[in-house]
Length: 299
Image 1 (cartoon, helix red, strand yellow):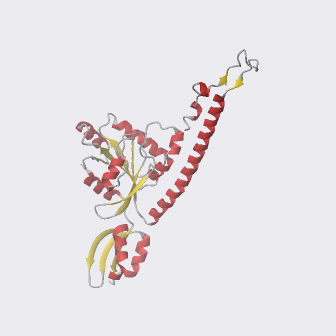
Image 2 (cartoon, one colour):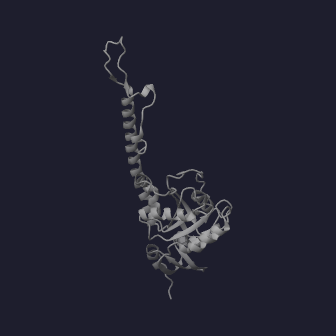
Image 3 (cartoon, helix red, strand yellow):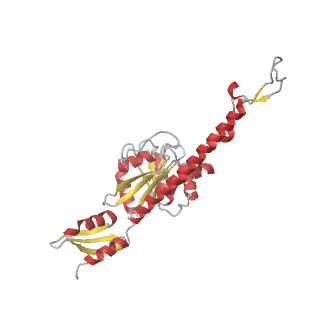
């Protein structure tokens, strides 16, 4: 709409800029009158401005909702992974393959506009969230960067970026550079990154080898066939932030919910079922460690 606004033009008789003066029989004596065209263009411009204002309000409201959800995930210490990449690199297909989310997959520019956040689980049983984001393009105009800031926020606030690149594209290195430029713009330079070379089934093997050699932290996968997905899940597991506190606790069987939380929020190192309860050694976050301290077994 911002692009259309200065380019509105009136076409045809119904949008003529001005009416010709009256003919010889007209009583107006040939005086030119203002035609309907100018009015129509002004009306169109006003409507577009009103729509833009409404959309800006909606984007601002969406931001509040996303912030609340993000704070909730952080409070529950759920690590987040953002899938970023050039447009049409296969991000939504990868999200579907990793989570079975059933997200729209379309060969089109900006087919994903709203960040799709899905719950996922690592092979070791740790919960995390996966967020699909808008496809980036080179030299994205600044007003578009603003419009997509909502989806890009997921990248900046994530614990890990899966940077998806189309391995079958003629110039994948250019795509990588363009996406990193936008990642810099949203201030996500310190977030760890795994380069996921997608469409490995359709890519030139030499191009794949080159990319995997240049990009130290990279893996080749095919979201279509499932090739490399298990290895990618292991890589995500290894790169998610680890809980900070190591604890040992003897949790009574009456506190099964607490044991379940250790499994979902922490990293279980060993577990043994005894007559008194579950003897578990795990790495957990400070809040959960505080709850478990009353169950520390007597030495």
